[in-house]
Image (tube, rainbow, N blue to C red; front, top):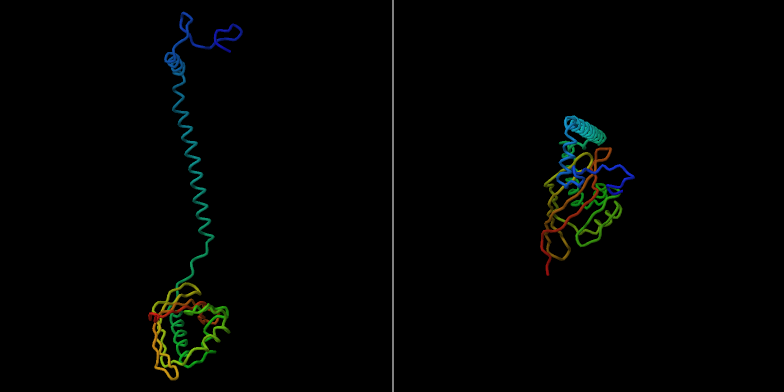
Length: 210
């Protein structure tokens, strides 16, 4: 209800002559009325700050505990390949070259996992040990075949091997054809200690003839 109505008590500050105070004067009067309570302000702010600090501390501690819990739940990283693992992979790689030169496709296919996939150049992927064996059976005779491994990296039971190859293909009634290129394969270690090929891809460094 507007100030000055008789039915309600009036709390509007006025001058001694009954006129309304200006806005500046009104705020000044309010500030004067608050002076007796000024000594409570530092304590109030102190309590607020303490509450904020306590809340922040609790939140930080909770986050730290959560981080510690999550790190404890994570499995440790698999160990790097041992010297014995690298040696076994190199031995398997040498067996691969020997099987190709001997045209022993059964021995070659046995170096692949049952669910292996090879990615030959200019050919769709070949999946499974049986189909991989059939694919290599179509290879022409070779008088030379080398597949040295350049890089062997891995952890746990998985290894990635990068290498190069060189071969000489002998075709009846034609001059020998030489080729060289690169390859990369993924191997998995099995319970018997063998490192079988999971994925295999290779392609030539020789430019295609137009």
